[in-house]
Length: 299
Image 1 (cartoon, helix red, strand yellow):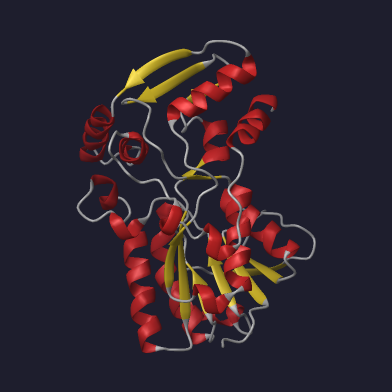
Image 2 (cartoon, rainbow, N blue to C red; image 1 turned 30 degrees about the vertical axis):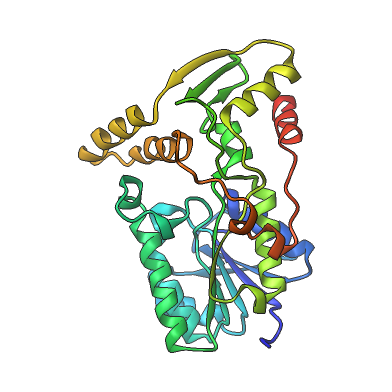
């Protein structure tokens, strides 16, 4: 049995996902440290120790990780290449568990896809963790896919629903269930993983607050607002084409188009339910879609 994990460093703790990880880890009773760059003005909750580090230096990172039991990386996709140095530092500091910055698309199943071309940093990070865990039996990792950041996506438009104009963009038939998670739910997932390290060692798992269809979302928001919403239609194939055109010009805004095509297209089959879901393993309950949508409508 692995020794308990008590001291956790969160990297990217001031970001959207990082804030929730920090909040839920504190609630669960862990000792939390957050890394910040020199000169950063990021603020953290009371009870969080803050260490200033040079992300380009393995030595700086190693020194800051001395005595820590686990690292939770929530750095942005564009900075994921920095995870290799972070992993090397964790190994040098004898950190027992590493949770890489996955939290989104399941990167274990993107080989040969256009979106996979933009996720190679994440793919290589998990491959590297697998290799290092085999070389060092005391070192373990857990990867987490969450699907769409649902509550965040509602606020910033990536779900395709605009409450101001009461407009919904429906891709293909709108009947394809997709994996989606609220950020606080993901924070609880991180805390649950580290609360039961033996159950979650060297695993890539998928969780979800729920697996709605676009039409189910539309039905709820129309019922809650008491109005019919304007529906605009698009196709996954159209967005795949737009993504390729952007990528050919070096525009990484292509990602959002590839994402829409991947998760909403008819036949995607990327919902996470039953044996494919780690919710039960982690003791997490599926959340209420209508409650999440009502909260968003009230904001």
